[in-house]
Structure formats: structure tokens, C-alpha cells
Image 1 (cartoon, rainbow, N blue to C red):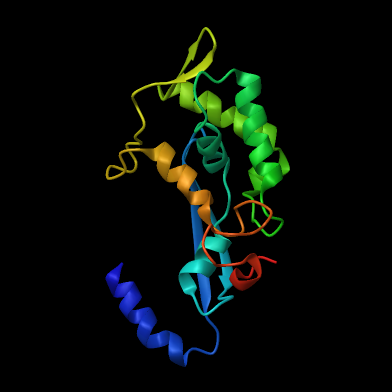
Image 2 (image 1 turned 180 degrees about the vertical axis):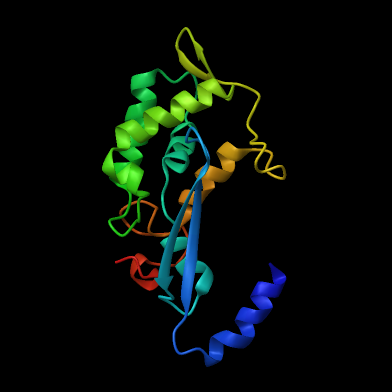
Amino acid sequence: MSRLRAAYAVLEPVARRTFLAAVSYDVFRPGRMRLVLRIVPLATANARTSLMAARPVTASQVLARALGAPAPWPAARLEGAALAIVRALHQGAFLDPALSRDPRRAVRRAVLHLVRSGRLAQGAGGYVPTSRRDDPRFPHVADMFALQAAQLDGPCALWPQGRLGRSTSAEDAGCA
């Protein structure tokens, strides 16, 4: 990544327009891993903030954030929490088309995949986490749940006030 940053530092000052490729992986989706790509013009002087703001929101990210609540998670409560997160997203957030089309179905498919892959187990009170938090497709990521939940920390994906929890506003990041 340092080569890319070095090239960007040289080319960006002379570029007429700069575009960013914001990428999210929907890792909890069954089947082949889904990559969601969004190409956007650079909206601010801060490329990192613009990239975070443009990052697509996937069912995996929403579900990982919902799974941050204490277990067990009855199916209806887990689904309700995930759907509430989707409703609370900033209006400038870009949803994966599958999540936008049918959020309930996208969340249910992700939960089913997590159960089948051994990352969630169905207990008496609902779903409970297992010790398996990795994903073999990402060997250097020990906790895929934490990584996916953290992907929602871009200004557009955060809550309606459009704040990163720092001093960057949604308008500054190009979300408004």
C-alpha cells in the first residue's frame, strides 16, 4: 500500500480530477464472496475521509454491528437490531444493492451462513457466538466480526448526525 500512497502523493497535485474506488466485502453472505465497489469523485481534500464516506454498506457490516450486543440473540431481536441499524444510517450512505432491495432477506441469509459456517450456534435463548471469528479467505484477520463492524465507521454510514465521532461532518466528507 505504501507504493500506492507514494504514487498518489505525486500524481494528485497535477490531476484534473481524482476518483476513488471504495470497496466493501460482504463476507457473511453465502456462496462466493461478494465485493461491492463504488467509484466516486474525491469530495474533500482528505482522501481517507472521502474513501470512508463512500464505502458501501453491506449486510455483513450491519449484522456484525448488531452482534455487538450481549448474547444470546433471539432471531427476531437480532434481525430487528440489524434492520434498525440500516434505518439509522445517514441518508448519504451507499447500501449494497442486495441490502437496499430487501434488508430483511440479506440479514437472514447472512445469519444462516454464519450458523452453517460454525460462527454462530443456535442455543436455547437464541443465537450464541462460537469461538470461530475468523474467515479463511482473510488469513491475517483474527476477528472478522470486529473488522466488519468497524467498516461502519465512515461518516456516511454512521448515524444521522453524520459524524465520525471526530470533527468531520457529513457535508465535509461529501455525504450530504
